[in-house]
Length: 205
Image (cartoon, rainbow, N blue to C red; front, top):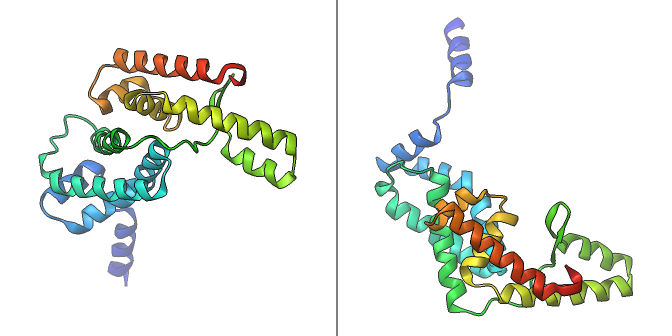
């Protein structure tokens, strides 16, 4: 009985594999470890793809393609950067391809710059509709249209940097690593994107 109790306590306190050990297990062919890694990142990958492409179908396709590439190439991961950075690099590269091949959809959720940064007004718009405020609804529709115009005016790289900074909350250094460029280049790209948004939004900014 005492041995059973000790075994149970040991099982509870046994440390879980950290991410590096998990990746090494995958590199040795451990399918369960890969599924664990996917579960750790599936929502963030899907959310990033959705924010970048604004299409549930495209986001799901990117999600599947990204983890397929991870599975095929995980053996080449050498731990010279974080897995998070490596994974996001794969996701953004796939999204780049999507953005280059099609015109960005115009039905973008409203994003405005406030004293606290850029804010997604999608949810407040939905709440306002429920209240039935015609004047505010009209304003939100106009704002949404202008936001759509502004976003389509960004280059794929500007849009990528804008989304990673304001939706993912990533630091410019990390964005540079994901996009394979410098922190300064990412900063300059973000500045250009922000300026374009302000010009296009005009009185809405």
